Image 1 (cartoon, helix red, strand yellow):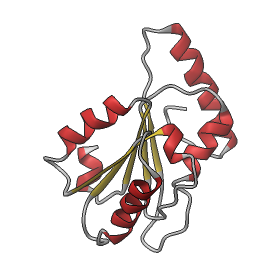
Image 2 (cartoon, rainbow, N blue to C red):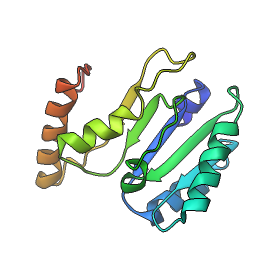
Image 3 (cartoon, helix red, strand yellow):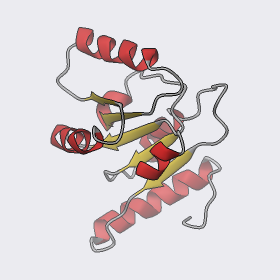
Image 4 (tube, rainbow, N blue to C red):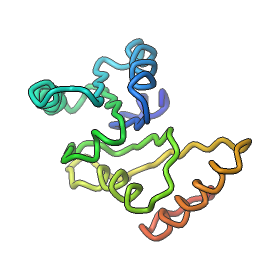
Length: 147
């Protein structure tokens, strides 16, 4: 993530649990001026205020949006996002498409999108879930040595 910050990428870190979102936010504040956490349990006004805050961040300032997957799937739109860090396991292709779709909004400064997908190779169930995601990535046209 730090390399992506240095590259000026606009990042979305998707986590499963609110505690994970807070954990990453605490650590990333030392490296990014704008770290925004969207998590379950927030009221509509609070979510709208955070979306307005995201929209007001100048183009030349680094930013990281950290969100729980359930919240980011509900009408969230930020065309500047170009990098996704998927750090919780999912297997359903529809969910994967929804998350990846957050990166595919048109934006003048966007040249490419990247997805970093993490896997625990010690847990057979997580390996199986990753294999399903690989199929989903291929269906969406993603390429890479890792696929």
